[in-house]
Image (cartoon, rainbow, N blue to C red; front, side):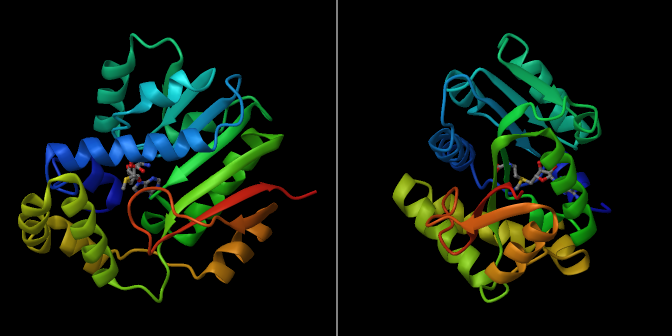
Length: 231
Ligand SMILES: C[S@@+](CC[C@H](N)C(=O)[O-])C[C@H]1O[C@@H](n2cnc3c(N)ncnc32)[C@H](O)[C@@H]1O
């Protein structure tokens, strides 16, 4: 396994159980819907993963573009959502050819940590081009250098305790500690940005951004940023 895209294309154990996976995607969908300002909105979910609750998001907007780099995941998305005429599945490369200024809301949740800083700049440029002048980019689940792996462990245990999968969360943590995830986390690592660093990176990419009061998803120790075109 070379990188995080390979990891997410494999039969990984990042979700400790089916219940964990289901409540994760329900929560992400609820939080994304909170950022949709009109039922006419065009929404782009950049590196969406399995996006199991995508139909809920699609119900709240006019078109949902699911973009995913891992080919196996993308194949499942195409099969799963073929009947839903509001959902389109794309590779990340295909986004470069999208119509300019066509997207109202772009979401990139829990992705930046797996990218090199240069890859993230490239993604920002692709998204900025695709966003309408009034559009917003919501960048979620950014890891702060001040918060270590302990914060992730605690957040998962709390999430498990409040949603009925605490035992699976404990077993999952042990399994993860022995898995490819641990090896990749040691070998490739995860990118971390302080609030000031991410605001500066977004500014350099032509966005004007603020930190949101709450992170998307279950992990309150991570950060979400809301960015617009800076003129
Ligand atoms: C933790 S999942 C997040 C999925 C979804 N956005 C969510 O919030 O549940 C990480 C996603 O990042 C993608 N990814 C991993 N490395 C990447 C890279 N270098 N560039 C772009 N996407 C990457 C994976 O394919 C996967 O879909």
